[in-house]
Image (cartoon, rainbow, N blue to C red; front, top):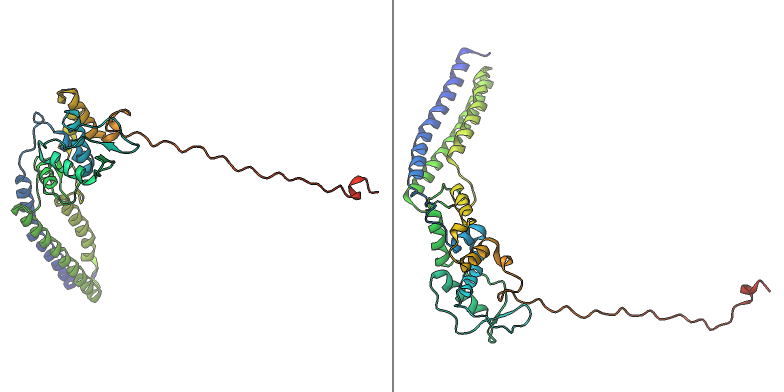
Length: 299
């Protein structure tokens, strides 16, 4: 069991570790509470989602262009020519006047893709680091539909509450380094005094600390929140639809261009299959020499 002095010193080190952790966890607990309360109320179901928000939640920026082009075509503002070659789509120029930022971005991307013959080819990729996409994403996060990496729903990076929360997290991480140093000091005391009983408390302390630290950590990647999943389910109800065109926009935002019918004008015709190639005939082997005597019975 060791000496009384060794047990007292080891116990004092364990107590000091508990005090260090408690003094740094209390500010983090307050910062985490302030962080959650800084989020605005989530969007109510009666507001609903527009097609662009559905597209972003389903596949991010890559589906925004498809949704905008299909929506403009469905409303008759983007005209597609009937005659078009395989794998390419011809559009009438000049194009429509954009009614929102997503349509403007889609028309810009379309103009960069369309050649001199007025034809384009799928896929059309959205621009990188576009402020219009950033504004859409911020609206989705602020309404509690999307969680930013490492943050709770409705909280955007750069807010004062986020900075205080990260600062408190850094202090707690530093405190656990000190707990490790105190554990090493406790091991030295235990070895010198043959008092190992206090060391048994450190694994329990580490386990409890790890469990409590997870309370203040969030998913490390961007993901749809639970409220966002519920809002997406409302999109599947026909009550969300207003016209046939809205149905097309919803389906494309949800499933992409695969939701379009095969003969839809925005679906390019397949390339003609190449003509079948005839396999070269193997040359016939003709033997013109007479058979040898050995082949006639051995004469």
